[in-house]
Amino acid sequence: MIKIKSSIKNNDTRRLFANIIGSFGVKGLSLFIGLFTTPTYIRYFNNNEILGVWFTILSVLAWILNCDMGIGNGLRNKLVGALQSDDRDEGRKYVSSAYIFLFSISLIIIVVIALISQFVNWNKVFNIDVSVLDEDTLRNALTILLMSIILQFVLRLITSILYALQRAFVPSLLNLLTNVIMLAYASVAIGIGHNGSIVTMAIAYLIAVNGPLIITTFIVFGISNKEIAPSLKFVKKEYAMSTLRIGGVFLWIQLMSMVLNSTNSYFVTLFVGNEATVEFNIYNKIFTLIGTFVTLATTPIWSAVTKAQVEKNYRWMYNLFKRFLFIALLAICAEFFLIIPLQFIFDIWLGANTIPVDYGIATLFALYGSVMIWSGSITCFVNGLGELKLQSIFLTIGAIIDVALTYILTQATNSYAAIVAANICAFIPYLAVQTIWLIRYMRNATRCE
Image 1: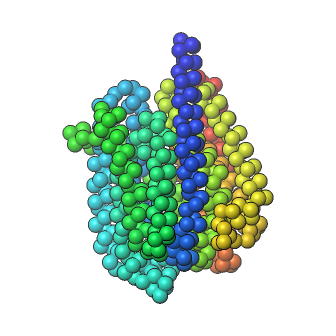
Image 2: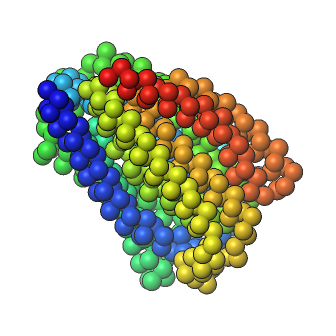
Image 3: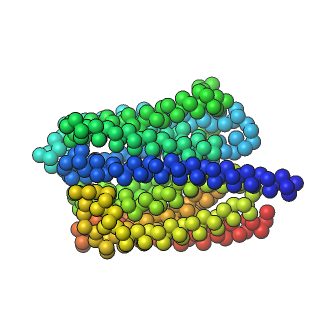
């Protein structure tokens, strides 16, 4: 019995690390490609105000993706349980119900947004003068991007299913394809002299993001996993509600995380200005790079922890937890070492469009990157366990602190550094309380195994 259990744990470890290595390989290439997108975007738009609006729009529209009622994350946890019990019919019911539920929500969102969009002054919302970007052009670009986001709303469910299937490297591959397509489009447009249009960039984004998701969905359900493919006859209200119950908590957490993680670009635009958004994104892209690699490892860990919990493999889980915290500490050290060659990195990366390094701001972003690393490291374990109470409470407190401090500090300094500082302060209560709780939980669970 001990040998069998040990063999299961070894298989889990091998599968987990295979996913992590696969994700690192694909995402590493994706990040390498992504480094070229910012200088290419600068050349494509040739106007930092319009580029700032582009960055901000993508940031704001990404908020909508967090409004899936938590269905994606709820499905991910439920499907792992169904697959572990080898109940394919139950898995298919969860998948079918999730797709239909999200499809219904997406239709409602399309109608609401289409009606509201006609009466909104988007130039005022994104703080850009009509002389720089006229109303019709901005509205057309937004309409295309909104359609893209709504399509992702449903299509992105396939990534939750891939995580449950322990195929965490595939979503990273999809992100790579998106980056390659966007970079290729922008480069070709610059080469033939058809750059500068935010509308055609929006069309390219729609294709680049949703095309890979559509192809992957057909491959997963049409070839390799037909037994859990969505079907109307497998749609069950109780399964949708079951996913929604756990998903509801995830939704609240997603919304609070959205305030903490996804509003910075918009706050920079709103309180400081569009041109500052470009510089903010340059620092942000560099100092979130290491955290992105850490996030790659956290992605397969979530479902692996859920699986370990179902099988009561708590000792394996605790050992994984300790190893991962060590990796997180090394990554945090790397954040601060990154400051030393930063000017060289900017000069090579941005070329003629380079900016001088402000080492005070660089240190602040290193601290911000460290906070993101630690948050991701503990959150993947908490989410995998489904123990969400503390996270929902303290992220809510953090969101309130973030908005209040951002307003106060930007009014006093008129600097995007204030927004970063507010974000760091907002995360501290959550990180302290959740880390202590998680260590105690792991120790107690291991003793009871």
